Image (cartoon, rainbow, N blue to C red; front, side, top):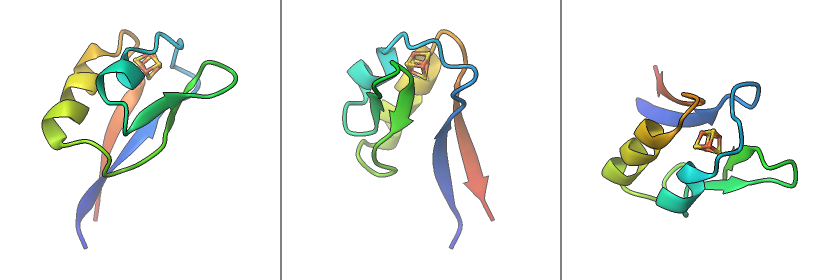
Length: 66
Ligand code: SF4
């Protein structure tokens, strides 16, 4: 099934945390203060899109699956 997957590039993330504040059900900061994806379907698309736009380092990628 086609779909999309939310990915955080941990090499690029600077731990600003805006993603986790905007889309709490999708992103969290781990013990290294780097973002992790806690759920692929936790927030609606608009909320996820806002989090992607808010990321100062462009670390959040939306990958379209085949
Ligand atoms: S907003 Fe971007 S830089 Fe900040 S924690 Fe989330 S992924 Fe990392």
